[in-house]
Figure 1 (cartoon, helix red, strand yellow):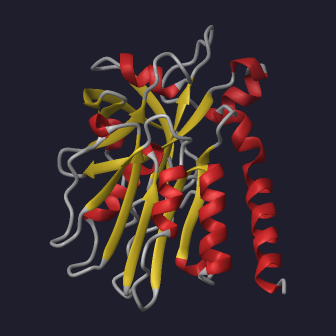
Figure 2 (figure 1 turned 180 degrees about the vertical axis):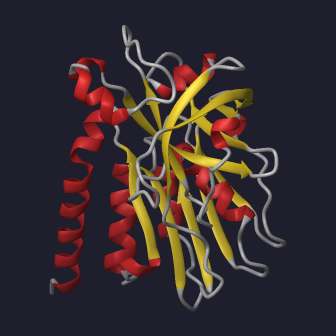
Amino acid sequence: MAERPARQGPTAQGAQVVRTEQITPHMVRVVLGGEGLADFALSGFTDHYIKLCFAPEGADYAHPFDMAAIRESHPRELWPTTRTYTVRSWDPVAREMAVDFVVHGDSGLAGPWAQRARVGEQVTFLGPGGGYGPEASADWHLLAGDESALPAIAAALEQMPSGAVVHAFVEVADASEEQKIVTPDGVSVTWLHRGDRPVGELLTAAVKGLDFPEGEIQAFVHGEAGFVKEIRRYLRVERQIPLSRLSISGYWRLGKDDDAWRAVKREWNEQVEREQESGTTAP
């Protein structure tokens, strides 16, 4: 779910559900394909994302949605709702795109849709966008996130440069939520089982407890905004790591639905950065 400025225009594209797979008890993979992906392409990032468009009940428009036309001709309550999700993988030969969804019963919009998606079902999406990819010039890499960041972390591990030094931490509910991920030789994922602890508690402790290697870091830290803020403060203030070496943002916020979080996310990020910039110069 990487929320960044899109590298392509907002033209809506169409696809069909090719198959679905239950990856873990709370992770569903939906594979999209079809002629609508004939011109689809990625730009080399590992946090590529698309914005899936969901039509509300009572909408009478067909896929792929013409977003501009809908907003001109329909009342706001009939506009599509968008949800941002990471592209887990893209196969240009088979013309198939995999997207992983965290599912918690009927909670939310996209998760329940993914759980019940059927082969042949049509979808509309915008994108892709993206902004992060592992750099061969970095001396070492830090990857940290919860379930929402797992698809991007897995994609980054699969595309790490040969010989890369990587510390990867992923916090999930329990051992049943672990996934098999292809990693470079000598690199493994540290899985943190949350259990009843607050989301991000173990992840924050793991990052703060890491013996940082020498050299220039490139870090990717995403997930629930609360722990992301704490880790960002640690990296920026205590470790004095410049923003140019960080891809770090809250994908979601505990206690807020997606629409409410997106409404305040930019302002929240700016406020956090102002606080942390102030902290770097405080006596």
